[in-house]
Image (cartoon, rainbow, N blue to C red):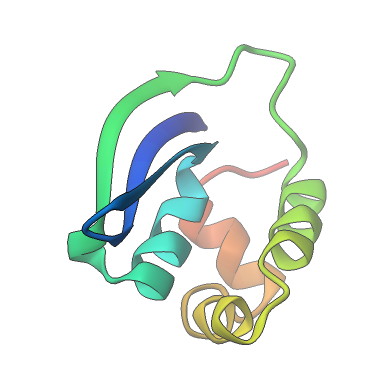
Length: 91
C-alpha cells in the first residue's frame, strides 16, 4: 500500500494538492477526469500503519459519500470483495 500525492486541477486557476492511499487514485480520476489528476509522488505506508482492508473500504465509502463519489465507487469497487482483490492484499 502506498500514499500518493496528487494535484487535482479543478479549473485553470484552482489546483488542489492531496495525499491519498493509492487505491483512491482511480476514484479521483473518475470524479475529476484522469487528465485533471496529476501524480506528484508515491511513498510506501510505513509497516504497521496500514489500515486493514475492511477499515480502508469503510473509510473510502464514507470519504466519497457524494453523488459523484458513490458513482465512482460503484463502478470501480462495487463490493468489498472486488476492493480486496483489486488492492491485491489479503488480511
